[in-house]
Image: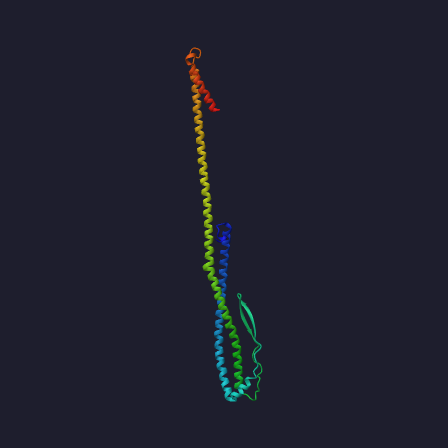
Length: 266
């Protein structure tokens, strides 16, 4: 049995504090979930917009590339493509949204000078190069947004699980525990008052018995006193001189009774 479930005032205070903390945690998880959902919805809308731009730019770039292939030839276009340098200016950083780390991709702006000669190419190749550079920038931005959306979705799922655990398990548990401990303490207090009441009734009964016994003793003493007085009254009516011989034994018996009474009294 868990010691924290014993019906004591200390455990009641702990249970109430835990319940208060659980409510605060649930409110915090709920706010975090709402903020993450708003951020995710914004990223989804932005990703849709960028995806539309990429589709349009890709169509324009491939159309210009086809024209360049027809004007200067596929072989010359491939030769020019080998002169395009590898992109090495991409930098990946992170930023935090409610404790969730999401990527922040940065790169140098496009628009560098072409790596081929103008006299051997056509304008269509310049248009294709510019379109593909734009596609590159949009693809970097889209990858950052999609990765951020994926991480936010995972964080929302985890936050939802924690909020549900607090709402459906932790909060009901501490609510019931606080109620049980409070009821047990109240029942214990009632039992103490009832016991004290029974003890008081028993003491009153004992006092009544003592008083009854005292009254009985007092009544017996009164009877004995009345008997002694009656004996003295009998003895006072004797004529010892005239009836000494006749009443000697009667006097003797009465005297013995009087002596016995006084002995009992002592």
